[in-house]
Image (cartoon, one colour):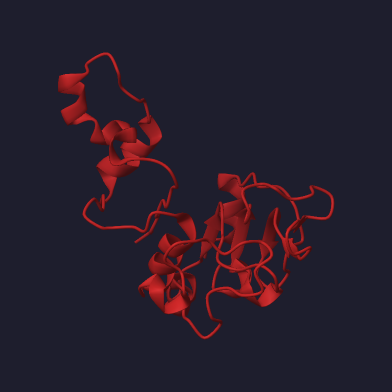
Length: 184
């Protein structure tokens, strides 16, 4: 079976059409239209009883490793672009586990789990194809790097990479035809 997981920052459960049944009764003129996400919800499994941390890095670390983020010192902050660390390299990420059993893995969006060294980037953590931003689109769109002003450290950001080719840049647009070409 295919697995598609959305991990979105700053949204609530009722911010999607499929979840607005209760709100529609109370506020009939105020609904959010999300027809494509609604279709995925109807045809798939909606996980609605789980808990996240209050900010992005801890939530991502917990989901992708299956371990509580306190193990990595991630309880109240994010991994900044100038931070010379990330989720430890000996941790197994979900992309690695799925790849080990034959899945093709693709990730798009924000990473925020360490990017000061290519070893910490998602294409080295089990994701065979990666498109998106790691630092909220703060990158230089020519060099694909972001400079942390406090520490003067450069980190990789805007990316469109295939495993093994860290931070090569490229488009975040990914067509169905491209994905189909990569499918077995």
